[in-house]
Image (tube, rainbow, N blue to C red; front, top):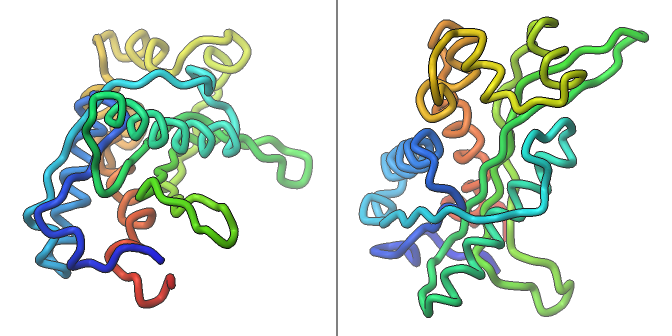
Length: 206
């Protein structure tokens, strides 16, 4: 059974990344949930850099979802090795997803969040966890080619396109493509609100 909202009071959420944009996203999502579930106002956030086996530049939803889940599981294992623990473990992964519609390929920038309490259902042996997705935005063809055909990371390509450094730690590619109407942090915030749902709205998920 998933945690009830009140069980998160004065507890900890661990993020499998130390990237500023991702930390901002988790803090913002917690604040949004706290507006309807006051117990979340006292939740503490711990952020740790982790290593995962997923590609540095995910190009499919499967790779994105796998990367997000690996990050959550990796931060869980890391904290346990440090004799620490959290109530929820979070992974965030951004990249591309391409799909063919009527023979025409479309590539989107998107991301996934995964949240787990690190526990396993004794009957199904499945981990208690939930995914949530960001919105999607079409990737310009010039950027798509540099990333997919050039086999380069999006962060490096975006830095090159705008002539700046470490854009992904600020507004990210999302901010560049949308003229800051949606930032990387905001896109992940929406994914987190979806992934957190079973933990702040457990009556519908148990």
